[in-house]
Image (cartoon, rainbow, N blue to C red; front, side, top):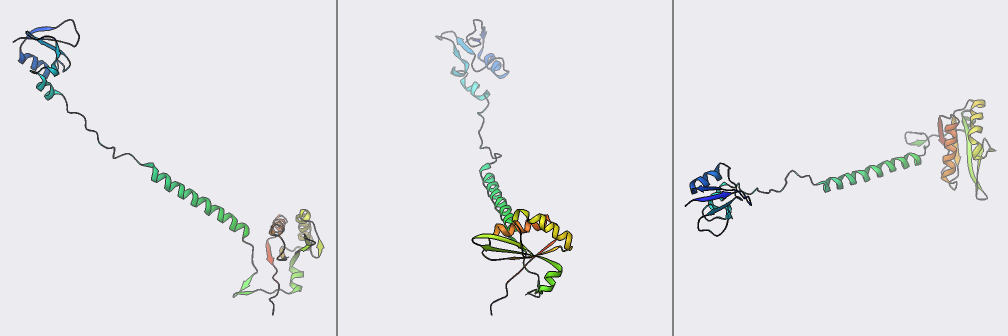
Length: 207
């Protein structure tokens, strides 16, 4: 039996081919699985891959379907994002806490062997600039060496005191009911006036 082979839908074909020649053409790539074949006695052209005589040969020559594997190299970013967010929150909270701690870290009284250092009034008068803060009629009143000074003028006043007395240590005596903002303003004024050290007065313990 002779066969005729053509490319799918082509008006031209190669005739008088034996089964062995068609098989050889498939193996050497001259014919493809979708090319059409016809033999005498057959109704119509049909693809080689569907012809009962050559379907098995075509199946042998076709490469096996590509196996699809799970991509094991894919990086799951969700855990990484979770860890990054936790670290970010941790650093933000730590930084905020350190900032607040520095702001609220008020210098304490100088201690020796766990005891509060006691300074006599004469030592205060000779070596320190005394600043007191009290509430009067619900308003804070700041005095420098018993002289009332408005907070907005405190830096200039302290700078003049340092220049005239050569004292560079401040002793702050603030009542407990004085707002902390006032205390912070006093400390800022002291730094602005070039005062190197700030001490805090503590009332004597009740007997």
